[in-house]
Image (cartoon, rainbow over all chains, first blue to last red; front, side, top):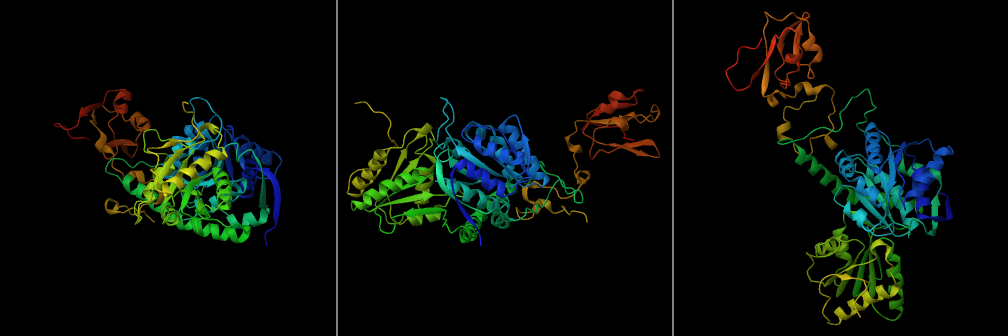
Length: 398
Length: 106
């Protein structure tokens, strides 16, 4: 039976702990706020001999991901972490890691992108990476960040997936706040993730292989992209299977879409990341006042759980979607677009309102979330939905 | 065992090794790249002193040699870069345009 230990720890600290417990062979990383303490703590484990991981200090995130790709192709279990501008600098390598089918696990501390310079939380960085072919988890809490990191290893390395996987947590809010986290003993985690047996390792000199081949005009490039699509579709079930096995050890439930109060809810807020907790808090207060409100939290962003989301939102009178990232010129933020698409096949048309909030760490005040629920109640009562997307909490002229 | 790619043109995504890995060493030999060439080398056997400098410098290992003597060019892989013609100390190699009447390549 696993031994559980409860810690008061930051999200970054338990992500570093989870990574140590998953015994990567190589970590190549570059520090960036607010990810730094993940790689800093991990470097501490290396320095103290608590892991035999080869820790490669590089001169940029471009190099970090390049080194990770090389190490993964060589046959190592590889992990890293980044944030914001660092993730942006990795952009071309993110595609390469996915295209080469290398099961690298990376934590991302979700943070705004410049300009203006800002180091605080939003999802601009990770949403910008949404089409790079990485399986992507979101954590609401430090606990989820710990759990997601361990599960990510199994999903990434599954023979039917073999895709790089990102485990994300909100910058400062989750990375730096001290939270109550239950961690498992090393042997249990090691047993759960198991040994990595690479299939086409460059260091397997008995079976020489080539990575990074060319597939040009008239070649099978299109077929390789279909392979990636199929692998990502395979991940849907494998994420659930791995989570079921993990939940049996951890005692904590998991779903790709997690709901609160949806049994009889008439209106609901769809949210991703740390703000889910704030929304649940507001929803609980409104429930106490007799309002039938619910919360739908997305825990896995790629592959996007559109069927599960559509099922969760079935029969509602109004839905709000909270996006902590812009997609300038689109009809709404990335989560709004996915949600509306997921609902397209629903028998009854539900009004869906898109809200942009919290960019660059803008305060997510409870009264703003109350306003969202008020909008939904008004729509449910027959009022017109706000036209276009709402910049929640933006200053307005008096 | 040789990796059989003779039917590759009909393979679906299921037949290709994941991530475009090539699971066999040295099979670039089977990949005909000579079609990239716009000029081909032509060697004058009478001028040639068999110094083998062309064989040393050819970046595509396309100088065929038997019994320590240059015989022909491997036109399946020669890309027509002209380095052989450039280094030849006795000007025994000329680069001639592809697609026109060519002297027999020896």
